[in-house]
Length: 291
Length: 256
Ligand SMILES: Nc1ncnc2c1ncn2[C@@H]1O[C@H](COP(=O)(O)OP(=O)(O)OP(=O)(O)O)[C@@H](O)[C@H]1O
Ligand SMILES: [Mg+2]
Image (cartoon, rainbow over all chains, first blue to last red):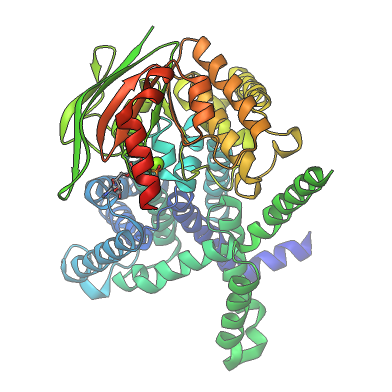
């Protein structure tokens, strides 16, 4: 017990970061589950972070309220740009959403209300570990149950083959739009929590490199699986700590680990398990054939 | 009772008339064969019917409801099911899961129910899978492949799964695009019985096939396309005697 208290005191910041990163990873996994690559989650996190921080600075509203409003703002922006953008396919969607992220950065850098390049500081430090993990647990529950709903089936079908899905009454445009908006909202929650966890935020927190981090969580964990996304976030957030003793070689080893996963487990870590499952079923079926 | 009407349907792909002036009906309880040489426009007619492409002339109606102008998922929701000549299953889903997606149109379980563990949702899932197993059995997918990812199923099973998935939507109209491709004569005979039994459930069936014995043995009427135009229609016996049909087939074979 004492050991646990000690461990927490030493690593609470890291534990909080893992939780927030896992929420970011879940946000991206929603659009990935529908089979589209939208890369604006960092930007949506930023929008919500600014909205939540400003409300908390100017009005003194509590974390729960500012986080909800921040997430709603991110979802609203997501809905506005989602209408045109989710009609794009593949790499065009990725490029358009990256472009949107860059525009958001320029706006944040130049508005006076967002504090320009300096950002906002003295944001009330209201995020606590249990609040982060409560949100994460609620989201994990949501994703777990989502697979059993008709919407969850529609999402999976669109990922597998959107044309075939359409010929069974599923509207791929609608699935893509709502997963995009939902993804923006979840990224917004993560961004608000991040803002209240750190004393200050600036546009640089929501740039392309953060988006790539989120993408790496999902790719490493398993692109279309919410469990994989959370696992990936935890592993990638821990790697720098684990390899801390390597000092200057740390980034190289990080890179090697990432490469190894991408090469040897292209479906991500979660994919190792399910590939094995499907593989066994395939083998069993082949055996049945030869009999 | 429903019926599908093609009225003067035409489509133009940048100057190529893939279809022109095509008119015929497919009534429920009947199987209409659609035949013609390669590139005649058979698959294109299925694509026009299901909203994949919009006709540039004429119209398709189901009973009195126009299909042309509607989008793919809207047409599917009216009960128009199809199979794909170039198999388009959901590759990483199992056979059963593929059929469950096929049933999307008829699902009525409350969508938010799963979040509060509503027993009705669980029951609906069990019924859906039960029905999926029945359909897989009916079309002849071997039992030991039911839990297999579609992408690794044998080719013949994938074709059958296409049919099971289409049946899962309880279609009013079923458009089969070369379901017998790659089947041996015994399997084709089984398919013939299956298609007749589907029609007997008051489904309007259109069968696109190159296998002439299957078409002649299964269909109530046959329509013949050649270069996008309907060159003959009638009973199988009438069509096979038609000089224009013989000409189209001999001509195309001579050219190959
Ligand atoms: N989307 C499209 N764009 C351009 N041309 C097309 C398109 N779809 C079909 N075509 C053309 O229309 C013609 C008819 O093709 P279709 O696939 O309907 O033939 P088919 O009768 O199904 O032939 P097969 O027996 O080989 O399947 C072909 O010349 C084809 O190249
Ligand atoms: Mg064809």
